[in-house]
Length: 271
Image 1 (cartoon, rainbow, N blue to C red):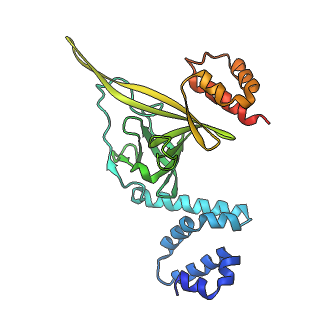
Image 2: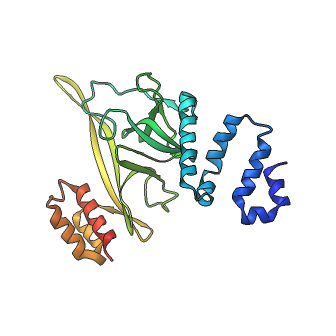
């Protein structure tokens, strides 16, 4: 019996107790699938439903641990390790191509609507791609297909993917670092480019970095080009914003990100 026919025959269960309906359906699937695959399918397909219906937090914790154990057992067979081979940049290029440092960090990523945790990753700012590996000593470095990456986090930083389509044409496609959230949300879009110079000593190459800042307010995205842009956008709480910037005691031009975070945090905390 399929999930559709089961729910059709028992509509009252589907409408009133959707989690029960899914549970019964999986019992039928047990006859056709092996136990490990069912456990994985259960966790990925109805994990959100379970969180809404199971009040026992310890059980939820066990479900998450089961999922993590499953990921560890599968290792490099996980679907996330399916992408284009990523090759390290030439050491002859000065600087680093990645976000913050050329080191693998453990983090989490939502890829193809599935959450993966404790994944070794780097964020390539030149290609705007998330690079993952099952073993950073093994040489299998995969660049994930960016449109399938909903968000990822590592080292205390969180990134979300925005597109022209999802932002009504206001934002270029790409990954954006979330700086603050609340009534307004601040983002940073950081990119790196390979620059080169030719002179009598030869060719020198380096990574040049450029960062743009945006604030989402009332459903619209606004690029912040100056301190005046920031204060003007947050004018409803101008006094609190100016006070936060004054307390920060950092010049805006040399510390743009810190100032934007301080200002938007002050706005979000204001009544």
